[in-house]
Length: 285
Image (cartoon, rainbow, N blue to C red; front, side, top):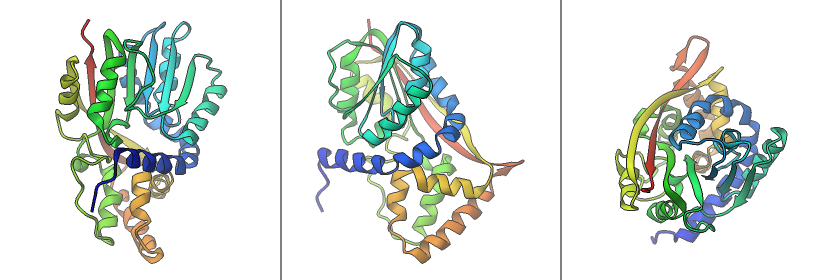
C-alpha cells in the first residue's frame, strides 16, 4: 500500500478540520477558558509586545492568534493561517465580536508560506506542526520568514501515556477495532511527542537558543459525558477512528470512555491530565 502524497495528506486534513469547525465553535468558550494558559505561554515564549508583526500557524478558530493581536495592539498586527476555511470563518466571527482590527486570517498551507524572507517579528503555532506531512519543510519556512533576532514558539502534544485526555478514547476504540500501529513518521496527534525531535528540526534550520519543556496541565469538565461529547464534536483524528465502529460498538465504547474518564474526578470536576511539549527558538541576529 503506497503512502499518500503530501498534497493528498493536506487535502485530507483540510476536509477533516472543515468537518469539525462547527464543533469547535460550539465548544469555543469552554476551550478558550481551559487552554488559556497555553495561549499565554506561547505569547510569552514568542516574546510578543506592542508593535510586532506576528504570524500564527494553524490558527483554527483563532487561538493563540486573537490573544497575540490583543498583545501587540495598537501598532502591531497578526496574520493567522489555516487549511480549513470554515475554521477561519469562526475565527473571523470572534474577531468581530472582540472588535479587533489588527488581525487577518488567510487560508493556506503552512509548508509554503506566501511571505517575503525576514518579514515577521514572531511566529506562534499551537497543535499544528505534528499534523504536517513535511515538518522540516515547514520549519525551514519558519526560519526563512522570521526576522533576525526574533522568536518562534510552538506547542505540540507530548507522549500518549501522559495525555489521558487524548489517550482514553483511542484505547477504548482499540478494544473494538484493529488499528494498525501508528507510523512514527506519519502526521498525527503524537507525531512530535518524542523529546528533542522538534527542537532538532529547528536547530537543523539554523535557529538557536532552543528551549524545550514538557508542560503539564489538565482539561476540566463538569461531567464525563461532556468530555465525550466534546471529543466527538472537535477531535477530527478521533472522529475518523470512531467512524470505524458499528452503531452497537459506538454505544458500548461511549459507555467505556465515560466510565474511564470518571476515574479522574477531582472534587466537582473531571480533571483529565495533558502534557504539552513547548518548544521555542530564536533566529540569530
